[in-house]
Length: 192
Image 1: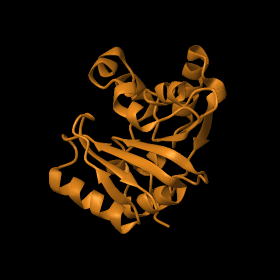
Image 2: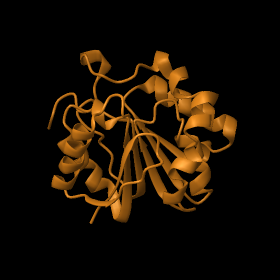
Image 3: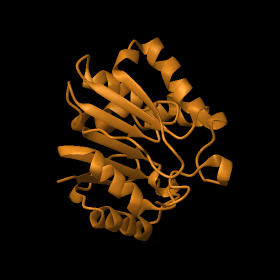
């Protein structure tokens, strides 16, 4: 297992610190990257959805609204302070009962589930071992489940993104789409 998989900030990792959460969740970003528009096509009422690297819950809350009362969202982050922000925000929006909070480890997600949809938005480039990350994600997908990976064009070159997608395919995921309206370089992948 790779060390520092998610990017432990205590070990020199590359995660966005919780003190910068305001940059990840504000009205300007919501205007530019509306969460419901970006993930709404992939989530149905009753689904289990996972927000990997959820940060302050920018996508998590909208995902919880999309899965409805019979669904569940698992908010995953390395930083307990980020998960605390999601928890407070979920209570304010009345969706706290639909969200499970999971603090991952620096060397892996450590989550067993059967997810219909997993979101990895602007975070795979922060993982030192994308191959292991995608292998773990592949084991978390339900049959027919989808993974949406979106990476920022400023941090991830076209060639780096292609290499990242190749690692996902090597991990057993299938490329099923290349959405162009997701706010960065994007790929939709599916498990077995």
